[in-house]
Image 1 (cartoon, rainbow, N blue to C red):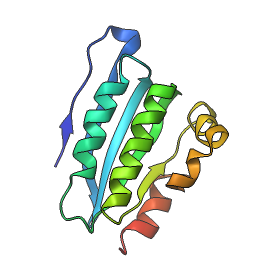
Image 2: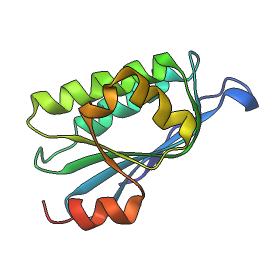
Image 3: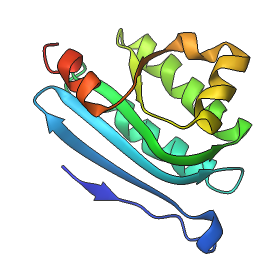
Image 4: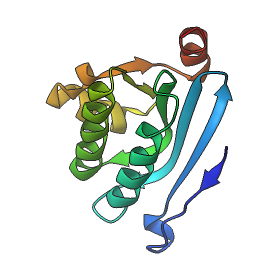
Length: 130
């Protein structure tokens, strides 16, 4: 399964998301670009699709290693998705992310809502078993 949905708000405000299955039992949303007020709605839609993935036993993760900026609107979309995943009894995993992405998570304490992984191999080592 692979779907790409660019958000055309000009070259500086383009967010690309792609839903993939890098391993059995793992569904990964790869996000590239800047997450700001203009692109956060597209991130929210992509996260809704991710969390709605069947089976509910699948590990759901977001790869943020291609994100250079995370505004509060993007953080809110991630938090909302974490709560939806939690209501299903599963964690939302976050992969990678620059300091510009991890710092807002840490400052707000919302990093505790996610299972964090340094890179995709760390996720797959853990996620492929469950």
